[in-house]
Length: 194
Image 1 (cartoon, rainbow, N blue to C red):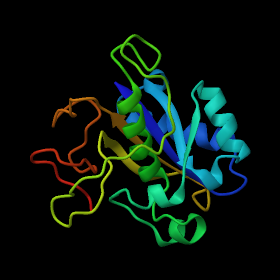
Image 2 (image 1 turned 120 degrees about the vertical axis):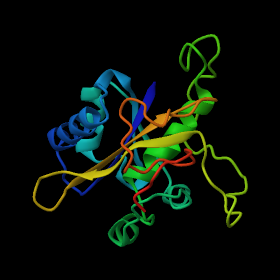
Image 3 (image 1 turned 30 degrees about the vertical axis):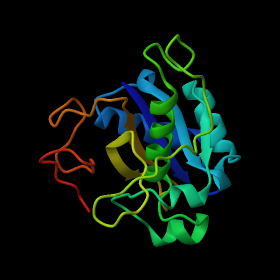
């Protein structure tokens, strides 16, 4: 299972703060660092030293998405503070979902560089399609495994969310790491915390 961790952070966040929260959300999901294929964030934060170092420590790339792309991703926990600071109402959840889409679209059965893969492309891939209710564009190909969590540090300097990239398969309703109260999209019988 390929996991993407979306990360939102305040200026000056340390790699330790990021890695500690990533480890906590992965434990919550019943997963480990080896399942993570990328950290993802908003483009405006891509040069933040704490995020860059955290990705290096985890041995994964840091992928950045433009705020206007992230703003189109439906999330269960939009934030006025994130919108004011970055131009998108969600960084952690939206970045995790957007990158999960990109991973799902570029990963073959043996990984992105295997015989079925296409290599890594930009993380701004999206699917145009009816959302069902309002016809808005919606990203597809990823589901939140763990919705936004905040660090315990004063001022919540970092947020993380975990998304699973899927290619033709969905998370089972009672699969490992799935919590019935968490935000999961389009699963029969799932309860979201919107």
